[in-house]
Image 1: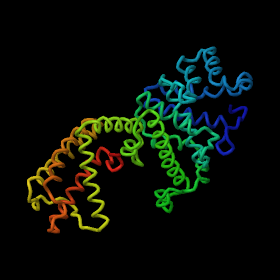
Image 2: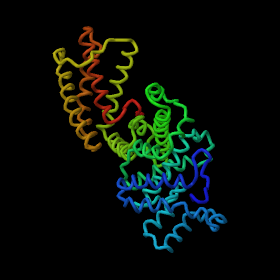
Image 3: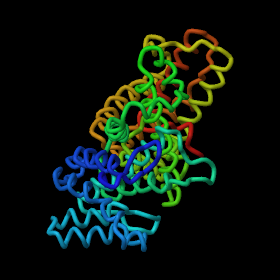
Image 4: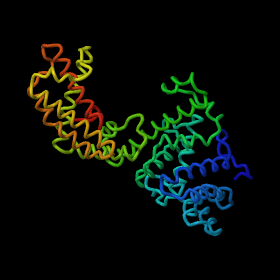
Length: 370
């Protein structure tokens, strides 16, 4: 590929340049997917070699398959040979994803290099137009991660891919994201371009993940409830959606959702009217047992749920939130939030804010239908 100087894209260099990037990235991703780094590097070096052969030139659909044959004939490791063919997968929604660790490492590196490169030169999909099949590449990354239970920080992987490109590539990428504009004065243009690319690419992957999950039967509102702009562990997003769906299918979940929404609606109405809301809850202002019971339950639920979330046990976190159902229901049945005393009212509104914050640890309940 280097000798023949085969162009990949006018702004992204030659196929040789691209293979060097993919090989370096595959070796870095190898430990994450339990692959041998040197085998992953070797497979990436050979992955595109068959593109220059007459067979693939005549029959492009044989790319990868011929590379595997050539690799087997010259005695390459079986995982290397398999990765040469399998790194293109999945090529469609019904196509199987690679399962061998070496194939996974090369497939992820190949797709991430493609996505980061075309994002860097601002050649993103627009409307129905996607000449470089970037939506397919993004879906490939998503499916490989989810179907192989891979824990991968997308922003970290994208940053590693970005580091393999020359700095000059970022000069054509304007800083359109607000967070990028804020740092423009303090950093060079290359860094701004990389930051914009990482943030925008993560948003694109979120959009593709939502489509994939909806196609798999997941509720769109539950997906929106757990995804934040910074959510870069796709497998964790899916696990949170599953845990939330399971929780909301129970009576405790459904009732907690209703109570949380009621608290959020009251808060929103009072915030709109600029009603004073205390910055924190003052237990000395309680004059009902229901206030004290709710406050104590919130203290306990917040602590235990935070510990469960830190341990990535979202079902357990939901179970701690379920304990809030009864004290929230009882509070609304017996306590008038908009008390005549301004201090008591502000304190009770702060208690509602604690409900919103506590449940917000597991999901944004305001985005859930029902």
